[in-house]
Amino acid sequence: MAQDVATGQGTGPGHHHRTFFGHPWGLATLFTTEMWERFSYYGMRALLVLYLTASPDNGGLGFSTSAATAIYSVYVSMVYLLTLPGGWVADRVWGPRKTVAVAGGVIMIGHFLLALPATASFFGGLVFIALGSGLLKANISTMVGQLYEGPTDPRRDGGFTVFYMGINVGAFFAPLVIGTVGQKVNWHLGFALAGIGMGIGLIIYLFGMRTLSPQSSVVATPLSPEERRSVLRKGLFWLAIAAVFYGIVAGTGHFTLNWATIPLTVIGLVFPAWTLYRIKHDRDLSPLESQKMTGYIWFFVAAAIFWMIYDQGGSTLNIFAQDNTASSLAGVHFPSSWFQSLNPLYIMALGPVFAWLWQWLAAKQREPETATKFSIGLVLVGLSFAVFLGALAAASGGAKVTPLWLCAIYLIQTVGELCLSPVGLSVTTKLAPEKYGSQMMGVWFLAVTAGDCITSLATTAGADLNSRGYVAAEVALALVAAAAIMLNRGKIRSHLGEVR
Image: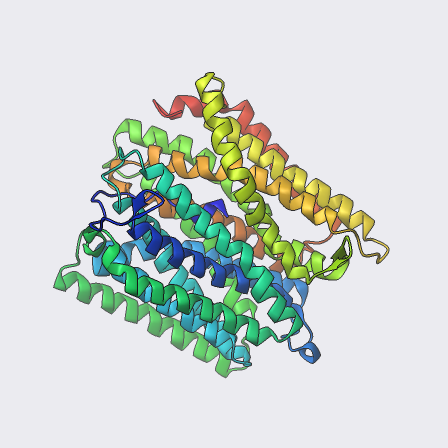
């Protein structure tokens, strides 16, 4: 879950005197809002591929595993892709405070659309949730940063740590509640619970908005009336073209799922590459900033490979949990969606340990550099799928394997995430060219988009993600990427300037 927290920029303390664990009271508002939003997001995500692949007799949509994985991967990739326009809307139109309020409403509507037993409303719901999450994701983190007196406020890092716990508390309880109701009672009731969770978060946010920094209402660079008209014209033009094109495709009876997933997958691969190219070759960048971007591209590609494997925790591993894993351990019976709670549980247990470990190593001047941490993360995510190969072999005769296989896989992935994700967020802020300071966090999220779109492309092309051959290829890719970074770390270091 570490890709979920961004380091907000800004100054200006909250103007209320009550404190929340020694922090501005506005942190309590943002903590609980984010906790309930993550509760809704991860609860729905735990059910998504299971509902898509369940037979219509069992209330599901009856999609093949590959189609369900493609839908899941495209959906997650769009959530992260839309953080960039989400940041733009706050900077140019509404300001972070209003943007997050609108986002909460859009997400809530999306979950309630999933709760309706109709295929069209289901896919409409996914669109709403992706749009709302894109609006919310970067901006709520920005508002956490605005509660403090600039980057030097000693409470700032602690504030983000508290906020980060909110993410993982929500993500931990979501599969236990929403997953259980969805799998054991009714899919749509589970999705409705996710909507209720977001509704609670939205009410808390609306009542607590006055505790936020006044700066959260500021529109940083508002659009002029002419720019507004231009944006509206262009937006409506492209919307009309898409509507006409898909109207013709559907009207002539040619529409299939691939007409939706393949264009989005291509956008999710082309847009990150174009964004990096555009920033790297911007003539306003100093030679040093351009050089730093060259070093950053190494980390970006490594992160995309990492997330490609890691994000299959909600698709490939989720399906394996349902179809091939025993649903009891030590006499306790549970639905397969409960495995989705392991990652946030491990994060809450190990996050403080890793924070202490890096500080302890830094004090001894033995902390690994960023490139080394990225390599360790890649090795670990590769090893997690090497363990998955063992689980696949154990399940090959149709036997149900012990849940301990998945417990081990998620544990190794979480340790890898703690090596790579917080460091990636940090290095993104340090290497950001001045011109792109606020946009670079959205660029970091594009690594998740690219990784998930590779998975979507593979499944659309007919790859079986649960086949031992494909899993072995992913293990090899992660290990080769880790080796490439380690072997080139001297070259990468030379691009980073004073950043370590």
